[in-house]
Image (cartoon, rainbow, N blue to C red; front, side, top):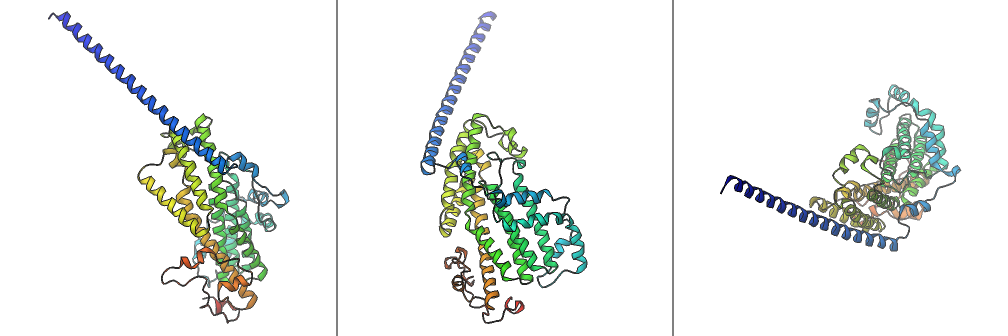
Length: 438
């Protein structure tokens, strides 16, 4: 074979190889496209079924319907406006003095010395202008902010939560200093203000639920400290008790989860049509989202999240005992799905509610119920001069509606006395703090 013929043969072979590669690439592209569109069709069909089911079961589940049903009190009864006005007067910083840690480490029976109290009073001087405005919350036990949802994915879009938390932080320090000064009744009054502050965070979003829980926990912590340090009058106890019972009566978990579901539904619709991009999010979320836009990831996450949040809402609506069993089951299922890497990328990023809700709400409601029972027992002691022998006495005295679930017999632990069994408390003793508080 001549050199020229050999070259032509090699060119023909190369050309055939190129054609084979092109055909193979074309088939691969067609196959990938077919799989993409088939999966897209499947996910779209699945998502349509989920949305149709929600429309049948809960016609008002989407954000616009929730927003229209959102009740806002009149301005003269809206505690949110007071919180905003009080927070606007906060200037400077406070709470950085290391003496605060020493103050909190003191046993309840030991009072801070005058020098420490004086120095800490100077540290909280920026709080003083806020107090007259914040005191108005005593007459406004609830309130609602006009919130800029449905895109609460940047911190600057939730200024009302920062305002409520800043005010609570200021009052948290003020109440501790008042206790050190021996002003127990005044400290408990500000604890009640903190509880009313928390009620303004009753929003249709999970982040609002967490802030509300945080503020309520701060208030309950200070109430416990104040009652360990001294006594107060019956009227102050009644106000604290009513605020705690009001907080417990609100099903803030279901409200927050319904709002979260509606917000995430709107989020995925906006991501799908391109009106939202990673640039609309904070840098951390945007960085996490970079690898989550390939293929049908948006639809896959959308179809995954809606049923999961619906199951979470259904669990939150159950009575307490069944509620936490159902939430714990969902938490375990979520953890197992994480370990198997079955959760879509965007769903993993925007669905922290299952593990958090299953633990945080239970712990907080237990803390809240303990505070309600404790204040009821203290009111009984102030009124009768003795501790109640049982929870039934508190219910007979109209101080307790029912025994909270956390205290029910099904929650006894081996070797631990039942919390509502108060028979070991010296009920015949006089109303003397040192005699009755061990």
